[in-house]
Length: 194
Ligand SMILES: [Fe+2]
Ligand SMILES: [Fe+2]
Image (tube, rainbow, N blue to C red; front, side, top):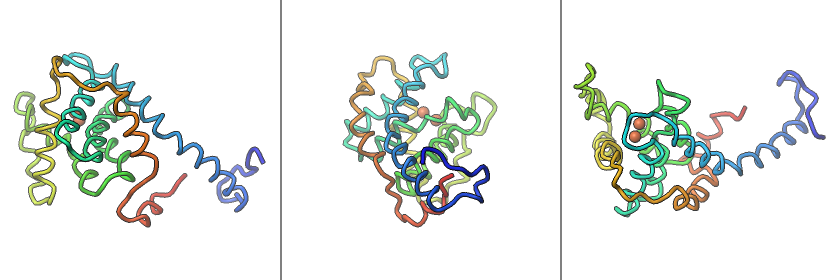
């Protein structure tokens, strides 16, 4: 078989879906490559800052690396703004969704809400509510999200900082995104594949 016969999913056979699953497994194996390429695209996004979004992400990840943070933390930082290119109105959620099968609930939550927590640092200049994060005050990860933004996001726009290049993080990306590591594998099955 080099192609399925169905034109409606409901008409596919078990053999056809087994065939598609095998192809999909191959495709998934290249996920790290696609993620790296998406990171590179951040080089061109959001002008006006002193550094690109890629440099910003590398700076945060490098700070976390020097602080001996976990790989989970380093990867969360490296990809926290990956949504900037395609989801300018919901960039936090896009990054969280991408990371969801690979990180703990805690990091999923932090990345999903980092945009709201970042507002603390600028929203009072733009007519927004810098205390938007307060709606999350009861979350067990509220303080973690504050620290995440304070240590590895709001302070990572320094053109003089000596960030590691993207190549430095490639082995970590390859390892980290090689397979999902959800706390509950049954949860992953619920997301569906296609
Ligand atoms: Fe962000
Ligand atoms: Fe950021």
